[in-house]
Length: 404
Image 1 (cartoon, rainbow, N blue to C red):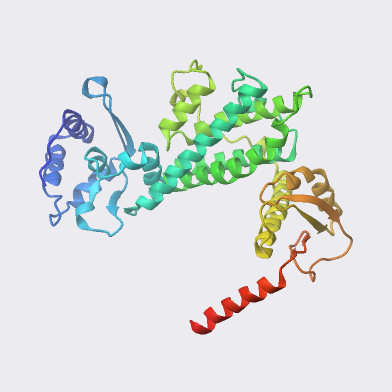
Image 2 (tube, one colour):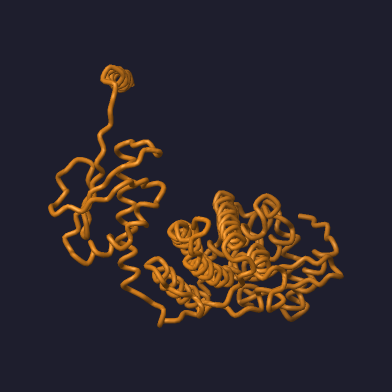
């Protein structure tokens, strides 16, 4: 394979030789380039030597175009089909554009490599996963837009004050603060042992599954206040959101540096306390903020909401139709917790609950009910149907089954 080096690529190649420490390694890099064709040999001994070098960071200054690479040389990037031609070290793959950065963005590509970089294995690079991580980047942008929109409306100019200023006033506040600290500990443990895939996946699960899908939805009612009403609750919710988002961005930064830098700079309106988020302290877990009770209660509340959503889907209730639910909670503590957080259920758009009634007996044998270890829940719903139309629909389905 013949490579036409640009100025930037030549600089990367030369710097790689300097970092690896001796001219012989540099020359072997050139041999590797020459032998990386479709059917050419792959020097695995050389790759092992490069992998043993550990962390490899190459930073190009402005005189070679301002490009910057920062990656971990600890594995091979291969095509999903596993063809020999794709066995090219990460340094070469990044430089020669084999990865679809132009299509999916640098952050999404970088996150893909990190999320798939299990120690001792090759990376079967997957464009479908990269596309999913691009959606993750979009999710982060949308969450940032939501935050800035509410900041402009509730308290313009508010800036992060750190998690020490986080005020856990509600169950969802105590839960997300506890979850963030637990995830932070898990991520730091994974990074210390070079399990980058575990760190990336834990950050992904927290940011998308817990912060965006649950916490942001749960605090929306507190952020929405009528004109003339007391905005104190909304301001506290905004303060917590900003402080948590700042910490989450710093946690995410190593695997998605560009989007996190952009949002972090905007948090401080272009005048941050440090030149870059990369210079800010990386989050460390505070075990005093662990709250097992809040996590347990929130898990029950989430389970209730998810069960209502699922039963709605099974009964084919139209999304716009509000429903009444009945709840049986044999434990008084569980019932009290649900009663204290009714707004979380009533404000959930997919569940679309209009009324909650607590009953004193089991609902397990009722139609439209779900049972768990902590509660039974039933949707009270009667759908009016056109008997003639339903008969025709079932007849057509039967004909398809018989004909098939």
